[in-house]
Image 1 (cartoon, rainbow, N blue to C red):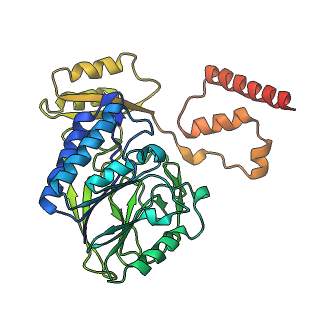
Image 2: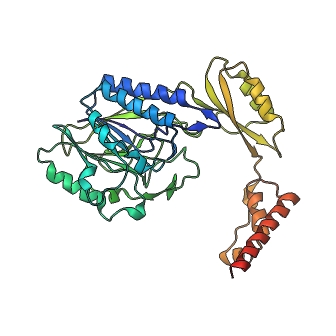
Length: 389
C-alpha cells in the first residue's frame, strides 16, 4: 500500500494581516501534481485542515475544489480526511455522504457506538484506522487498541494497517510552536506513544508542524508536518511524506517530498538580534525581486522609534517582500543575580516585588507607570475577592 501522508494545512491562515490564499492555492496545486506523479493508494490528511473552526465560504470552497482536483488526479485513490483541534468536527462531516462518491472519507468526530466508521478498507491494499482529534477527557479507555483489534480480526489477508491521530506525543520536537512545552503543545496535552495501542504498521500523526519520526523502535511513527510554514519560527523544511508498506508487519519505507513555498518567511538577521539601524541596512540590502514575508529581530534599549514600521515599509516599497513584524526585545541583563525564592519566601513576598523581580529577569524596566497599573490590578482583584465572600 502506498500512502501520501500530510497534515496541518491551516487553510485560511492570515500572517500579520497578510492574506495567504495564493500561497495556499499553490501548495494545493503541488498536492495534485504529486498525486498525479506518485499515484498513491491512499491520501491521508490528518487534521487542522482549516486554521479556524469557522472558515469563510471562500476557504471552504478552496478545500472542496482541491479535493475534487486531487480525486481527478487519481480516481482510484481513497482520501481520508480527519479533523484536528483547529477544525469543527461537526462541520467536518456535513458533506460526509456526498463526499463518498469521490472516495473521500471525512471523519470529524468520535463514534463510540459505531466504531466501524473509523475503519476504512482500501480494497486489496490495506486498512486505515482513522481517528480525528479527541479531547483526552472524552476518549474511552483503550479506544485505540479496540479499533486496532477489530481491524486485525478483519485483516485475514495480512494487508498493511495504517492508523491516524491528531495529538501531541511525548518526545516530539515541537520547535516552531509558540509556548510549547514537553507537557502541552498547541493546547493538546502530550501522551505516551504506548497509549495509542499496538498493531499498526504506520502511525500517521498530525498537529506538530515539524516533520519527524517519533522513536518507536520500528521507525513507523511519524508527523508529516505542515506543508507551509505557519510562523517565522518554523525554520525547517516543509514537505509531505510518501509511505510504502508491502505487507502487515513490515517496516514502511518513507520518502519526503518537499513543498515549494513561493513566498518564504524570512527573519533578519537570521540569528540573534540587531540594532534598529543594522536591521534597516539588512532590509535595504534584501533582494528586490524575491517575494517574501520579513520579520526583523531588533534589540532596543527602551522602545522602538514611533516611526519604525513606517520606515521599514518605506524601505521595501519597491521590493516584492512585505515587512510583517518587528520583533523588538530589550537588551538582556545579567540574570545570574536573579533571586531564587523558597516556597515560604514566595508566599511571604508582596505581589509587586515578585512582579519587579520577574521584569528585571526579563530585562524590562518596571517604571512608575507600570507600578501604578500593577497596583490598580491587584486592588481590583482584592475587591472582587471580597465581593465574592
